[in-house]
Image (cartoon, rainbow, N blue to C red):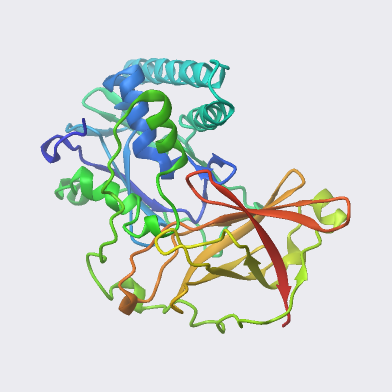
Length: 384
C-alpha cells in the first residue's frame, strides 16, 4: 500500500539533469521506474530498505526533480555528522546495498520462466544494480537517524561527456530550511507528475511495472496515466511553443537511410548526425488512436530536439541526445515530450531509437517504448 499524505517526509534535494546522467539500460531509466522499484524493494526486502531511497517528483518538463524523504523527521546533511554517526550510517547503507544487490542477483537467475518473462526479470535486475549509484555524498542525508539517498540512479557527467545536454552547467540547488518546511505534495500527485498524464498515447505500463505484475504480483496504479489536462494550462508550455524554432516536417520529403560511419563507431563521435532526420515505421503509432506518428530529429553534434507530429497535426517536442552503446547508435529523449498549451495534451515520455550497422552498409533501426516494446523504424536523412 502507498503511504498517506501525512506520512510523507520533508524535501531533501532539488536539481536538474544539466550535469547529472540518468542511469539505465536500453532506454529504460532508473528514475522513470522509481515508484515501481521502490515498491518492489519494499515488498521483497521490507520498508526499512525502501526507506533509504528518496521519492522523486519531476516538473512538467521532466527535467527538474525534487526529492522527498519517505518518512517525516529531522533532516541532517551527511557532512554534518559526527564520526561515530557517519560510521553507523555508512554501515546501514552498506547493508541496504548488499540486500538490493542480492535481489538483483536473484532476478537475473533463470527460474524456468518463459523467455519473455526471463528477459524482463533480467531488465529489472540491471536497473536494481544501478539503484545505489548516486553522484556524490552531497546527496546523502540522515532523516531521524536513517540514511536516505537523493538522486539515486544518477551519476555525474564528465565534462567531456558527449551525451551532456545543451546548457550552462549544473543547477543543483539544495533546498533551504524554508523550502523544507513547505507541505509536500501527496504521493499520488508525485506519481502522476513523474508518470505523465498523457503517457497512454505512446505507452502503456513501464517495463519494470509490467515485470512486477508478472513476477512480483504487485498492484500498480492503473489510473496514473489517464488523459487529463495539466494542472496549470498555458504555464511553461506557452513560453516556447513546440516546433516554433524549426519548420514542421513535410509529408513526402525523400530521405536517404542512415549509414553509420565506421570511424564514428571507433571514436564514438555523433557529428555525422548533424542535420535533420525522420523516423518512420508502420508500427510507430499513437496507442490511443492506433494512427501513425512521425518523429523528426534536428541534430547538432549529437544533441538537438525531436518533433513529434500527431495524426491530427499537433506538433510536440522534446530535447534529445545521441550516443553510442558499443556499435549501437542510441537517440534518447532527455525530457518529456511537450505539446502546445492549447492542445490540452499533457507531457509524455517518448520513444528511444536505436540503430545498428548491418553488412550492407546500412543500419537496422528500432523504436523502443518505455514499456519495453520494440518496433521496426527507418531513420532517413532529410534534405537541408
